Image 1 (cartoon, rainbow over the protein chains, first blue to last red):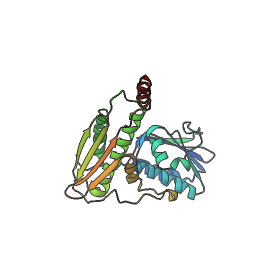
Image 2 (image 1 turned 90 degrees about the vertical axis):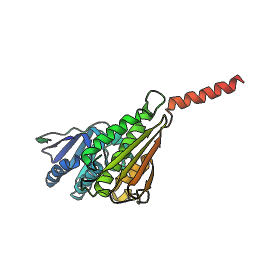
Image 3 (image 1 turned 30 degrees about the vertical axis):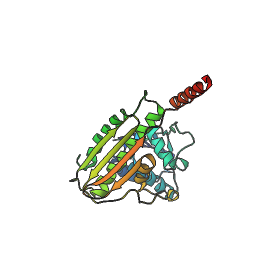
Image 4 (image 1 turned 180 degrees about the horizontal axis):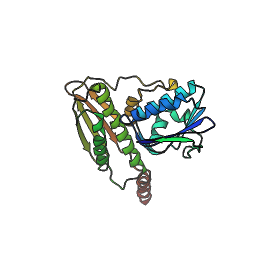
Length: 117
Length: 150
């Protein structure tokens, strides 16, 4: 799994995840999610268009991001879901609360800083 | 298989390969969904054995037996860790958006399961491949044609 986090001047952020987000790889993501939440972004766009597979551990991390951001007054919008991740989100009914209107179109975001893992 | 998450990928590759034996026809969207569901469920089961059955110790063993026929796959997973019965665990409360507890729900949604606690614990996951929509249609059409010729 690789992921990229970028933040924009307007207080929004974007998290792009590629590959497999599972019990093995999720710990790599959680540390940077903590740093992202510490910035208290008003909106986090989560681009999963290049996510090939997710398991319940990965889902747990994304739900945690969603709930904690909401608790800070922010929003999290998931875009780009397809194939196995889309099936899992639909099965767990997360598409109703976390997914943007356009399931397959990533939301653009301006970038001022980024980190790649 | 050693009961660590590092060995999960090998298991899932084997299961994915075995799914290729479960088809009478060229693989279509129904087969793709079948394989996705089988691999997802086995991955969750492997996680549960490592993280809960063996409590993440990393010194356990998981024995995997895969049986594939033309329309069904069965995966038996044997471990010597703590017993837990996935058939009796309550479903997650969707409304509260829990951050854990989804794994067993995914397993139960995607596959038929049975569990026998003991030494070893045996978790058996099985799934029948539904016919592809076009093959079901062809079968129906063949039946109609047969009926019409009488």
